[in-house]
View 1 (tube, protein in one colour):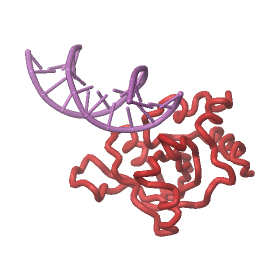
View 2: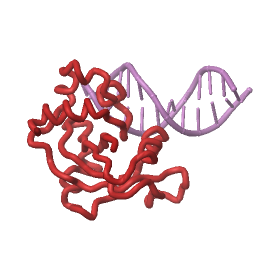
View 3: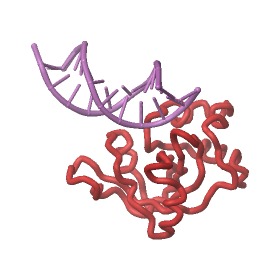
View 4: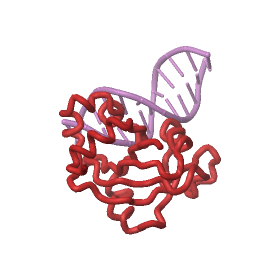
Length: 138
DNA sequence: GCCAACGTTGGC
DNA sequence: GCCAACGTTGGC
């Protein structure tokens, strides 16, 4: 079981919209970056991920679960692009901001901190646990 | 709004 | 196949 982080702008696709979809979930479509796509191709049903709001908020707000493995992105006919489906699991008790991640020396290697432009990225078990701790979730 | 980082495109 | 030009993302 692996851990991931999904980035989205609030104006494009927000956590509230994801939550509103409930257990039906939603395609994580629109990704046009090979690295991000490759991460999605390795995802398995049941993997968990953080939901991060980029740009204005810059904070991890919730937890999602992969509910369908990678398939054709329905927003394009281009066969190069596929994506997984995810559903909201729950909100974090307290959002974890990018600043908090940067301040914690244990998260110095986190992709979120180092590669700001990657929209779908892996998170290690250790990083996951630390973020959960920062979120006030035990 | 600016700019750095990075990915993609296209000319050679 | 290299590399310059360009476009996009996202933090500040």
